[in-house]
Length: 287
Image (cartoon, rainbow, N blue to C red; front, top):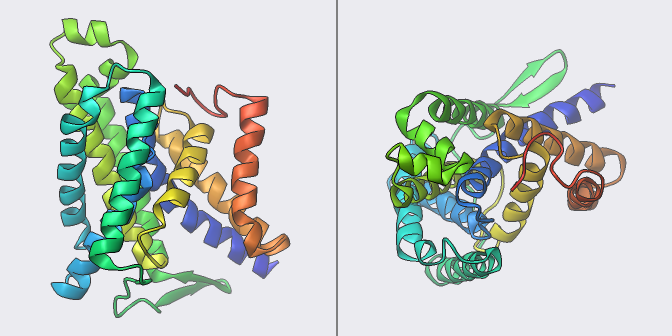
């Protein structure tokens, strides 16, 4: 029983990080109607920015996250204004191809600049943990979980109560009506993609504290983010948290009862099942 609870806790901690990874993808998908296949590469870049701030400038990993977010926001804003804005009204297939191309370019640039070596972000307190009722809770994973959930909730409040957030929601729901109320689609689209990239940057920094990073991690992380977006839908960031926790727990239980090599099989099996049974999304709206 203790082992089952331990695995459940590990799944919940992992699920919080998954939710933050998926939030940026869901935001861009919901507003721009773009399935951003380069999302995982942006997470990978965020992990490398955090890694070099920790190893080169001796930042604490969690203190480096705002800088990683700012760098990735600038990259995302530039990608949207310089590339995606040219095909924003084109067929979805065109945007899929372009974002896939961006993913490939970023991956090979990372390989060229950073090499293909595996790297980890290991602060001095990486091995610290708490024991509660016989259950071990790793300190780094707990902080990563708290930041992920806090940022997701903050994004929900931002979209709900700020003027810019209301503009983003208006552009997602009815672009014509949003224009009539003075919303500039170009500005909102670039801001939304930049915010999605910033969230990916923070998620990458947190991912680097709990797992190894290399230039090739982006594809798998994009796929997991896609699964969570399908589960949680695009309406509400809080449903993305539920989707992330659900996927984290399912993967952990699969690793316990079937084997760690079947974690991804479980993730994508769920995706196929949902698309067959409820193609409009399990908890909310999809595009």
